[in-house]
Length: 150
Image (cartoon, rainbow, N blue to C red; front, side, top):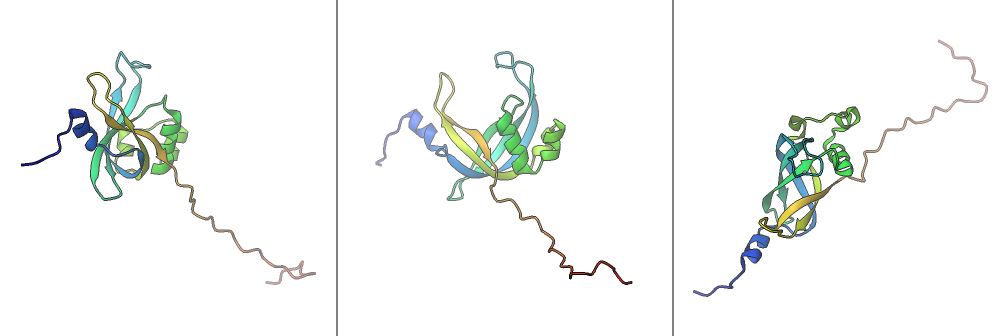
């Protein structure tokens, strides 16, 4: 048997998606609270479990979060998911997030200490294509037609 030897790092990184933009769907969302070692201990946030698809159709699970301190990412998620009424109200629940689908920009985070390399969300991609609003056709009024007959 012949094979190409790989390091543990190579094996782990081969399971990750390269940095880029991918289709995603939220498979699960859970309310959580940041731990004592975080920058904002005790802050409620939403943990996300996303299905992410490569261009070849391979699916991977990527964990993410919606945290109040990650202002741009939180707003962009709500825009992508059609949840702006929740964003504008300043409240978002985990159950509102399940099923949201769109595009996500991923990056690769290098292994640190006991933690292996992983994909993480850089941002949610808001579509530049907004549906065109219907504009009513202008009503043409002939000169001197001030009176309307019934």
